[in-house]
Each structure stands twice: as C-alpha cells, then as structure tokens.
Image (cartoon, rainbow, N blue to C red; front, side):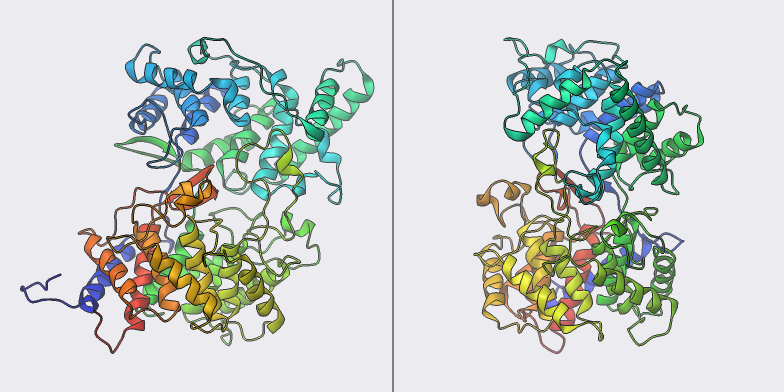
Length: 638
C-alpha cells in the first residue's frame, strides 16, 4: 500500500480513506424519502414462474417474455444448466423451470443452449425427479398430472390453532403459500402450454413418482381417495365449498396495502391464481393491485428483465444507519435524520398473525418490506432499534423514535419463545410434523429460534436498561448451547457459520461476556483457522449440506466484514488476522467506494433458496472499517 505521493501509507490511513469513500457512496444511494434499498437478487425460478403465471392468466406479453428470456439465458451455465446461486452446482428444478420459460419466450427446442439443457434434464431423471413445487407449476400448464401430486386439501382451514398441522404450524412465509395452494390444488386448473415438453423425458420413459411411505404416505393416499369422491357426494361438496370460502376470505384479509401478500413472491403468485380461480377477473381491484405490485418488484436493464423475490428497504435502511454511525457520521446529519423519520413512519401498529400465539401482546416492531403489516419480524425490529438508538434516540429520550423503540422492545420481549430465544416471525413455532408432509420438499416451512436472530435481539436488549436480567441470561445461555464444537455458530439467515459467528460474538460481548472467555476465544480461533490466504473470509453455500465447506469459500466483502466484527468485539482489532482482513477490504474496494460481490451471502432457506443482497457488499464492510478505526484509535496498526 502506498500513499498518494509514493510514501508508504499505514493501514489506519488507508482504512480511513476506504471508509470515507464507502460513506460517500452509501450516502449517494439514499432515496429522497429517506430509505435505502439494494437489489435483492435470487435465481431464475422467479422469472420463469413469472412467465408461467402470465401464460396461465393469458397476459403473457412478448416484449416482457423476450426481456426475461435474456436474463435467464445470461444465467445459463456452460453445461446448459441453471444453479440456485452464483457459482453453484446445477439444480434440476431450476433448470426445468428455466427451460420451460425459454420455450414460452420463443426459444426453439432445437437451439444449442436448449438441447444442452434438455439433455442434462433427461440425464438427471427428468421432470419426475423435480421438486413438488416445480411439478405444481407444470400441472397448471398441462405438463404434469395433478393426480401425481400430493394432496393439500383446503379443509385444513378448519383445524384450530391448537391442533397439529393447522395453518399456524407453518412459518408465516409457508402459511401464506399453503393457504393459497389449497385453493389451487383443489381446483386442479390446466391452461396448457402451446408446446409439449416430451424432450425432458428420459429415453427409458417417465416413471411414476416414488410413493411416500410411512404415516404421511398413508395419509396422502387417503386424501387422494377423498379427492376422487364424486362431485355429487353431498358431505364432501358442502365441506369443500365451506373450506374454499374460508381460504378465500383468509387470503383477502391478508392482502397488503401494496397489493401483495407477505412481500414475497411465492404467496403472491399463488394468491393471485387462487383468487382468479375463485372467480375474480383480472380487472378486479384485488387482482389488479397484485399484478401492479409484482410490476414494482421488476427490474429491467441491459442484462434483461428480472423479479426480486422480495424487497428489503427497512432492513437495508437500518443497516445503513448503523454503518454510517460507525463510520463517524453524526446523528444530526440530514441523511441520518431523514432515515430515522422514515423508519419511525414504518413502525407497525396493527395486530398480525403473530397474535395467534401471543393474543395479549400489544403490536410494535418493523417488517422487512415497504408494506407487510401482517408480518413484522423480530430480526428487523432488533436492527431498527439498534439503528434508532445509535441515531441519538436512546432509552432516556422522549422523541417519537425513542417511543417507537420502546414499543419495539416490548413487542420483541413478548415474542420470546419458551426456550429463551427468538425466531424470525413467530414465537414457539417449530412443529416437526409439517416438515414431514409430502409436499414440503423445498425449503424451511417452520420458524424455530435461530442463533443469528437471537444474537441480534440480545445485542439490542443489552443496551436497554430496564430489561429483566433473566431474559439476558436466558438468551446468553441459549446461545452458548448453540455454539458448535469447533467454536462457530450456524447462520440461519446468512451464509453461514461466518455469519452466525459474526452475529453471536458481538452480541455476547455486548451482554457482558468477557472477551477473554474461553468460548469466545474458541470462536476467534475458528475464524483465524478459516481466514483465506488472501486475508479475507468467504463461505460457500455448500456448507449447508456438506460440513467440509464450513467456513470455506472465495473471500467476499460481506463475509470478511462479519468475521472482522467478531474479532473486533472480541478485543482482537490489533491482531494480525484483523489487520489482514482490513487490508483485504481496502485493497479490493472499487474506484467508486464499494465492493464487487457476485456471490450469494444471504439466506432465505438454507441451501434451497439464497440471496445476493446488493447492499451487503457496502454496509457491512463500512461497519467493520468504522469499528476497526474506533477500536485502534490512538495506536498505529500493522
């Protein structure tokens, strides 16, 4: 590293310069309304399913299809497949959905890129080996038989919340999807593709799906028999009609102000289809609002047309405020003040589904999205409170922001699970039964407490003077119980052990654990052992399914920052590992003050559905640089 005029520059000087450049870049991204939002990039199933949805509804537009196809093609791998994350292995279901979408957009089956995809799909077993949700889409477009899918009857709407397998046993994201799917799978609609996809069938022919065994296999076979009862059978007809009516009302009651459901793609598309099947025309205000909402999730640029699976303005804004404060931006800076005002206006003051298990709890907190009042989440609430406190609205202040913080803290305390920890959206939500259902073959369907969410809550509560010490002790003890034998923590909402460890260590230290505690030292050793030769840290998503990948992967800016946050909190800012990590960030900063990060380091469902938060590459490194500079102030770094 050299200074501008050729003299050697210290790490402190270059880190300060990097932090200044990152601060300026982040300030330049703020929306005039006060919020930040980076693109939330996922995989091409979002775009493939959007084309299939529009075909199903009869509104597929040629220009939209062409632009989406360009994005899908740009993400095809050299072997003709598609992965679920950057640099990942081929995924059968993703490749099938992308292939069908490209056919809808006009790509010929004889085109070289299509021949390569079809050959790989056949070799991998064909459509029959794809996940249930892919086959549901194919059933809707006439390329699969409904009879060869698990049954999901709308009659589950009659199960009380205290009875196993009721809809509230599902996590909120799965619950909203499941209720809409009960309508779709009861109606069994077919809007055929204008082509066959026989080329995806292996040469040996298509086998029937592998039957599900055990109790749930027997239950599914029984439900298939129920589905085959004649339409004139009065008891079934009456029960089915009442169940569909209840599901329809449930869906309508949860449509948000932006026209969407839950702020995420799966419940949105299935709710649109469900309501359409219930007789709502495409120009009905409910459907029109939903389609307009999906359009607001759409990005189109030179790379093509793509959908965000979700949008994260509250999360991004809270992280941006924390980063700016760590970088030395004062609380009275206009950008911080405007962000505070916007966050306060986003506070949720109405009751949502979380009240099923906490009926006496007053509302509070924040959601992830612009509009998702039914589902505030605990992780966002913790980060927003941390941001507002850092922005000058401490526990003793009498401001609108401070009052919102107190309500958020009270709501979070009320959402604590019986084991002393926190999940993301609900309390005591971890049924093992629902995950065993035959159609639950993709992603998490429950929301038990996780180490990263609990760590963020603990870090937030540690700064609140009136919190019962037993709550703090319970959370600390639970986090210790979740520490892996090697010293790391699992990352539920970020990739993976680097994220979990980067959240747990700062939270434990904030709660009063001594940095010299042997268990903290064990986490520090794990981070040191997993630092890459280039000085950074990275972890591939394969660590969710293969222990050999734990803490291993190409260095990324966000993961390097998470490791640094843990080291700094543990009193290791002056150590060689921290210096090498900071040097990695400094050396790889782009000319405009940010970092390149094509890797996916965010997690929706571990392994199954992952995310590239485009703002992570900026806010986390800025936070780490700011804390490093504060921790080493007065001393010259190596």
